[in-house]
Image (cartoon, rainbow, N blue to C red; front, side):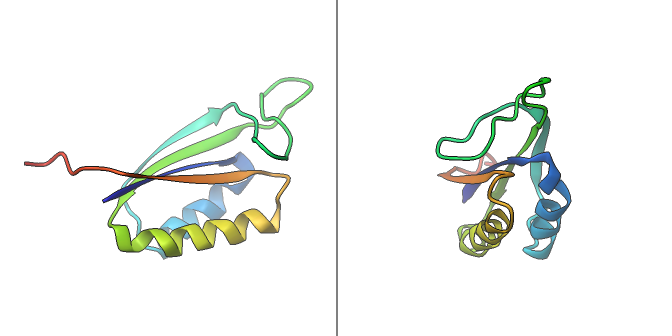
Length: 98
């Protein structure tokens, strides 16, 4: 199984949710009002007067075979508005059910 951590400008919330739904990724945890700054480009999202934007983050766990299509869809969304910011990171996880 894989865990995919997605951090994105809150303006992308509806589109990210649609991508998860389209790829039948049901289980996830979402954090709203996450602060951050991209490593390469894009504006900081600090929720301040100078940098008013905010991020949202999702951690979704899924079967390995779903990851490539999800990442491709997220990449396309990021390309559509690169200054907004969207990043996804993948980890291998173990199922905690015994």
